[in-house]
Image (cartoon, rainbow, N blue to C red):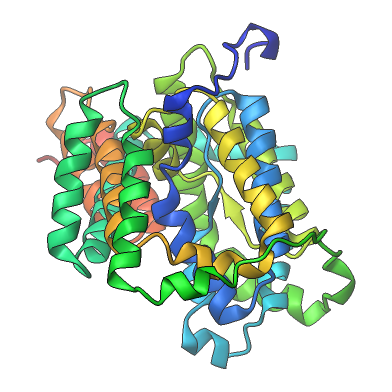
Length: 383
């Protein structure tokens, strides 16, 4: 990694402000589910995200994202998982164990060594598949109000062609209007929003060995392949392709993943990662520096400290139609970035096949890509 002083300075202009909120399509649904279903304390959760984003923006100086871990989130908030014994403490335990795993991967050099086995064609396929997956999830959200969503999508695409227009900020303002129109009772709920001051408490003192064990077995380990493909290999590739003057190293990304999860668990937060789709979302709406991460982080930090009991109500101001548009465009940006520079037919096959598998499961996509690349290299199959 180049010296931090030689890196371009962070900006805090209008495009950075607009791009800062380009990852809300992933952030809000997962955070809202954690709070509503598992009763995770919004105070520690949002403060953890805020501190992590501010630190990441200052260190990397690119629109480097911090997202909820998706596989863990999906398992943790499902009714079946709750019946199996998952609680808020188990989620905190999963965050701690995730942090320990990634610190070990970074310190031992395993993360870097494993990454060398990932061929470029397979990595491009994973990125493309993740883009398709984001687009699919965006469409699902848009279908809840299809006519409104299509109108917002067309409007946003038109605005994105005007660099000086903050498309995201306009989209969010319209979204608030749509939410109030669809649910007039929100006006009464907003009157209950109150400011308060709350500092996160230490969560480790209430953790048990059972919380750590369940968090490791049920949540942290199943998430590992997805994190390795999406939040380690893909984000490193995407950052270094888009910002060659601000490259990141595999060891650094593994370290930051470990440190931010340990800190998150310390104050009662959830498992977090650096998802490639998050960077695509920030960039799609104008972000080009770490200023966007700092802006989003500061917003979440202030909300966590001063509005913890009102977060669920505030999130209702962002309807599914708006979140779907954001997620769809982030996926489109990600898929467009997965250009296949290979000229061999086998490389194109690996890219497309890996992309298709990544829509279903990123971990299996990584494994398939590595195997297919080595088979093709040895001439064991032809397409």
